Image (cartoon, rainbow, N blue to C red; front, side, top):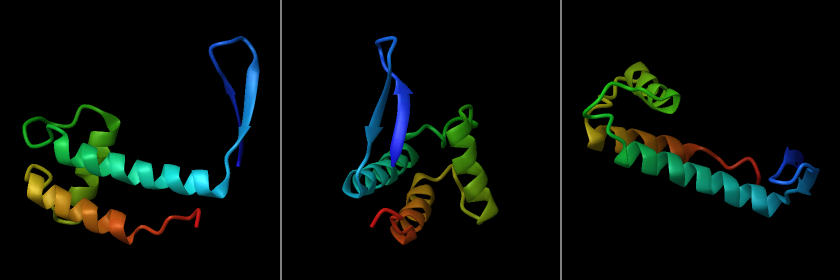
Length: 88
């Protein structure tokens, strides 16, 4: 995958990510979403951030009580474990 981005210098840069790099990035994103689901304050507050609203909406759509940490973690662990990495 080839991407273009503006760095700290006023010159546009390009990078090409390899399949193994994309695979690792996808796995890291799965880990980060599970960490967020685990350590967020969703059990104490209504969702403020868009990613929290997405988490709550998914839970509600599938009968999962997002306010119970154990339920949230179990649901998202199952979802993420079942999600095949498209960069294999």
